[in-house]
Length: 98
Image (cartoon, rainbow, N blue to C red; front, side):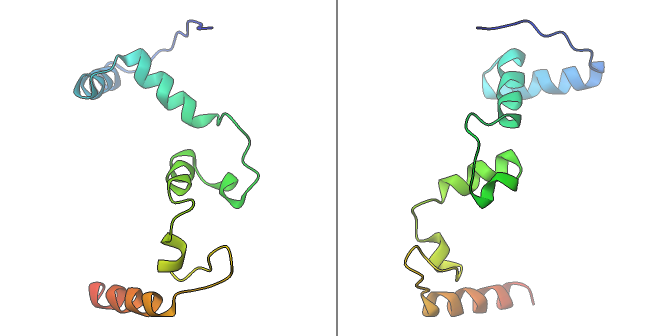
């Protein structure tokens, strides 16, 4: 069920939002609906991710069931860490940030 929502927004913000929506091929209504949906997740998250901002939480969910945890040095589900990849990753970061 859809309901109407009336908000007052600065004209400049409306212009920016209109341009943003047009660039993505959606209406302002759809743009606002998508944004508001990120504020209220469909299901309560009981994991540690529940304290993350909505967008970060969604990105973290994309990494679920991948080897990303092992690459960054965090243990996988069985508690294993791929030490070689961890060391390689740390060397990469040290070189990058010098």
